[in-house]
View 1: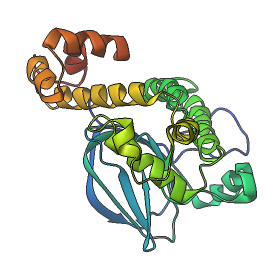
View 2: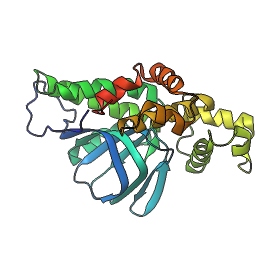
View 3: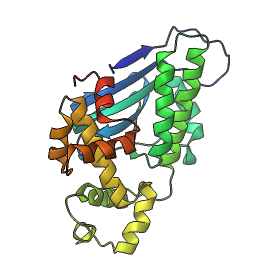
View 4: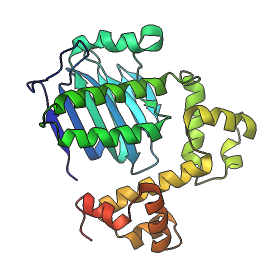
Length: 277
């Protein structure tokens, strides 16, 4: 499936109301962000999912560094300079608003402040469903009421992302970075090995883990491996080669786990992303 970018500034709406209207919306299935610097002209929320590597999303905002693992929410505000970087590719959806929408979103945030830097999207399972619906609405934006439905879906996405940001403990940057550093080692090292020198006991680690991730550490590792498989397949790698690259016992093993996770076989995934079988 190809990149889709919508310019909605001149698109008429049927419903009237004071809630912000979308200026732009985009879906980037295999986005690259090795290094990019920007000063945005619009208020941009982005949802960055399914990376091709375990590397986190790094951002520098007016010279202050931030970091988050995938899936991550991110916000870029006019008047600030952003430097974004991530190895590999990832799926990304973004929505843009005029700057005068800022007061609307500030009023929705706990403490009356918009988040700075990327932040983890703990409830990725809820966002996955909403993003799939949003993507379908993008395809039908020119139908009767399509732009109005897309406006409503975008606000729901932003609200869900802000709920993730307001989770207890998510504002503690040092703790968050420590948990995410441990998460990045899982799959390569055992939990006990990853915890050495961190100050976390197994009990405290699991308690803190649940603030940031919906699945168990074991499920987290399995999901990240399948996300890497999805990216390799989208880039044209065969199922057999992807299985060998990622340590699956066979192509059948990868196909079975992939279908269980994505509700489709790897071959159909490649077809949908335009890959040749």
